[in-house]
Length: 490
Ligand code: ADP
Image 1 (cartoon, rainbow, N blue to C red):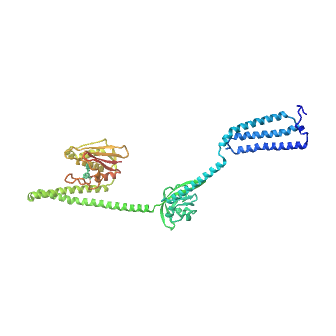
Image 2 (image 1 turned 135 degrees about the vertical axis):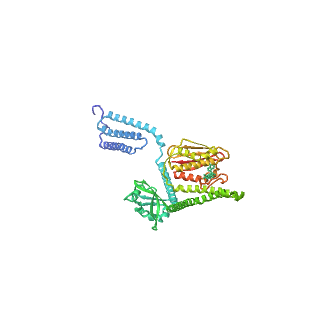
Image 3 (image 1 turned 90 degrees about the horizontal axis):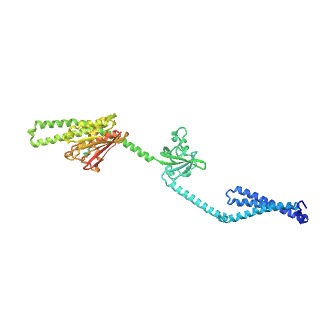
């Protein structure tokens, strides 16, 4: 008996040691297990942060802990009749048990919704199979692409070792992939040829800076050839690689060399032709002058002897000689253009237009032509040539008019600074669209000499002048309404 008047619980067992030990050992072991279970559960909760419904686990741990305590209390009360304390512990255990039960009731339907590990495993398996299939398909597709592209594709590790080599590379170099994989890139592109960047020939490769450069490569048979190499770097599993696009540019180089040769020949033959045109037209001037003077003398002194028909023939000879003289003069002008040194200086276009009007005073008066122009700028160029350009265009604008019509010409300008576009428009007969490009060719005329005289060189001269100033000339026309000649000057 103690102060509370209760007897220790051992009395119920009549203090029989065998019965006491049976209870003590059973309660002790159960209590011990009940204390260990929450520890394991807490360890589990802390490790599996993604655990669903962790509250249930926490409550379950607390519930088992209290149950363990009630068992230990059962041992205590064998000797100490603290039944109130025992009751309170049981009450706390009951409270935690009820809470656990209620929480379980709430969570069980939700837990049932969770996908079971078996289903998850099955889904995982399916996903893994899909991933593998996609990877295999990707690898096969990539392999097919790599082997079908016309450009060589190569992969190199950061030490210059070849790690992949496609079918086009085999065509280009003559090596099979197994002969080069693992070997140094130096085998295909001998190092010194990449040495443009300084002492380290592989510097450009390892820094990924060699994009689209031309290098000298070597085939399996030892022959060397020009190769266009574009490299870019990428990182895979922490290691850096270079992937390169390779193209054998032997045909392009050969074509470029051939083109250059042709261009040189063409330039030479053009120069020769121009020299010939210059010499021929220069030397023809004198005999032409003689023919003209003597046909005039003949007409003056022997007109009566020749008779009507003879005078007519002489007229034809005279006008043909004039025509020939003009052609020779224009040809000489045209041929001279290349020989003239290009001394560019500021040219005031308004002043040049004034000079053109002075030069053409007689023609302007005869036809009543009206020539207007915008406020014109000062450009850089050869004043003589620009005056000739303007004059040729103005003469044409006046010349190519329907009979009796007053020619109206206007020179406009557009564009500020840099390259300006000039436009000389007229109200003349116009040009059919099919011919607007041809008229700039030497000797290309759309009219007979008898209808409108001309040598067919005026616009060819214009084009040469504009192009020698770094500009462009072209025409637009509406037949029957007029023509616009555009040209650009810096
Ligand atoms: P030419 O006037 O001596 O015949 P051009 O080279 O100046 O030679 O002109 C070539 C041809 O372009 C001319 O024969 C003419 O048919 C056409 N042409 C040139 N300018 C004009 C124009 N303003 N209007 C209509 N046709 C033109």
